Image (tube, rainbow, N blue to C red; front, top):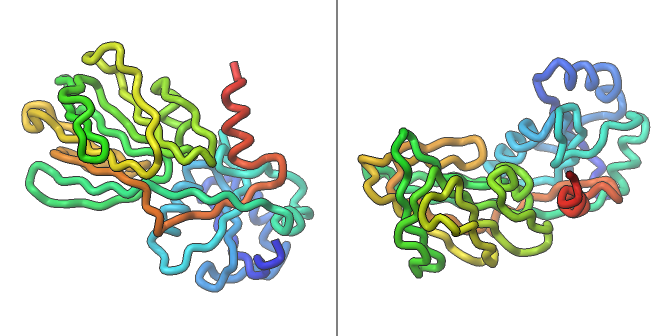
Length: 260
């Protein structure tokens, strides 16, 4: 895309990514510092991309990100092809906007904590005791007592991650939906989760929180001993990922549903 004239290069600490950057990418163009860039090129895997996107959320100016896969899955990344074509690929890349979840959690000591999650927020039991959770959507209690190992709320971008492993639905990127998915639900035994409009606010209240402690995990950040967690899409922190034509995130989400 022509407006992305000033590019920053951000490279994972992995040996593979560092070697590729040194041999193929650092001399491609006059890279600029991240603070001066119109867009960032991220070399690594999905985990490093998530770290980068979270760092972007904390910045005053959020810029588009183009990922090159030097990791394993690379769901959030583009394929690592001929380095000489990188700049032209970025010029043709299609933007896909994703909005993270905002989590507000109150712990047993009464403190309030706020995190963002790009993929999902999961509540998980901390001990051998099953978790007991009250589930409310838009202030209306939908499940008075969910007995389970945990529960998660996933964005479309995160629907093929932990959510899929927990038998949750895959959501198209432009679906404007959220996946509410139980993890090993014991009661209600037949409840398989729900698909919600992304304008919904979801609140989990931990029942018997001292006897049955629960942690909340927002992507890679864990908060232990939570008493209540409220979740909603954060419209003010929208992120932009750049994908090669034909390899965009929405196409990958569709393709994932036909992998056996």
